[in-house]
Image 1 (cartoon, rainbow, N blue to C red):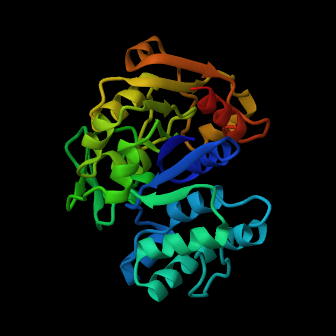
Image 2 (image 1 turned 135 degrees about the vertical axis):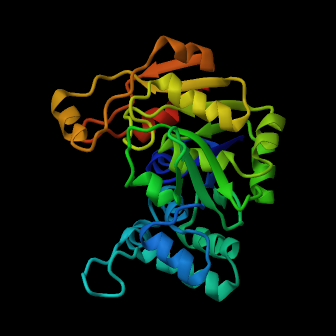
Length: 315
């Protein structure tokens, strides 16, 4: 069975993993742990655990569809009562916190949750080290913290020219081994500077990717994001991933070619998000470009998990 490793966090990894689990793969999801906002950030600060939000999403994505529906609903449930100390907290985040306290650590908590959800694969943190993302903008100013990049309070038109982890973080040993032994490594779609690149910054990641003899695949976003990739074309996004990964080229870049309706574009434009232009320079970023209709038939720009899974299966 082919070994597939995904790298990412949040919605993008969730989508890819839901697609992959329908095919005969041995799946390992590598997840960013540098989030510091919302419920995740509060639990990270108060209890010193790994940020559970993206870990939770990947656990839910790989959970057994037949046996885990109730548990999946519980993991996704978010308390919504203003004034309550639980307001904004996800049950899944609290559940992972409880498991960590009971079994003495984050990795044990992930393992126990995996057993309960009957996972079709495994979920690993990219690192166990506690670190924060620092972004340098083109005007020389510095933004500290994933949440301040994700929801910019600065001029979001300014490009990020450098990203660092402070203090430095080291790749988790099981994660390093999984990447080195992978038949395919997939960098999922997601926020480039707050979700994807931080994974590539951990010490040992470049070396693990270089040592991996498997194929390296990147799935391109279909929309830009103000504060991170405003005005970016597809090649701009891929160049950033290549820069921080240490790779010269990807073996494959997968991108969406379906046109987004004017109505949906107008909705996203309110948040200063615009369709990503698949430009000619993208050819320099990969040995092969795969262009396909990746979108679901809804009023949101979302990739269809099964379509993405089928493409990766063919690769």
